[in-house]
Image (cartoon, rainbow, N blue to C red):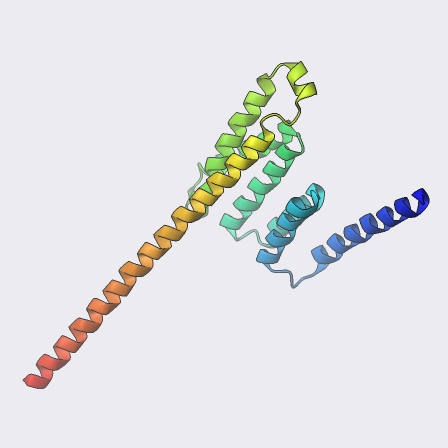
Length: 192
């Protein structure tokens, strides 16, 4: 029974690895699909390395999508943080924050910078913890930070949605006003 269970798990593991490799070779994979597959890997199966491979391949294939590249870089750094690879995560976050000091920053969404700063501060606090707390409570703060990051991201998404809705209302008002003025001008022309 144990051999069967081990064999079954091994087959599942190997098939999922080959699935990722096949996906990464697919030239028709859209940017959205890269992000979706990476996020599914993290959320559904804790397949962090597969998720990182999707984000890295996205960065390689779509380097001109500056805003999305920054998002992918943040996601990789966050995965490294979740894996407790704090040095790697901190280095990636610092590099990401440096990019916001360049002229290309106008293409970048704000949320990766905000969350990178918070996550970097959390890593620095993690490094200051006494060794015993790290040994007996390795996840202390991780769940809270993940929750905080998700809440912050949700807040930023809500703010973006509000801005888009407001812009749409303004545009609709302007179009309605232009339509009224056109009707008024046509009526004046007809009366004259």
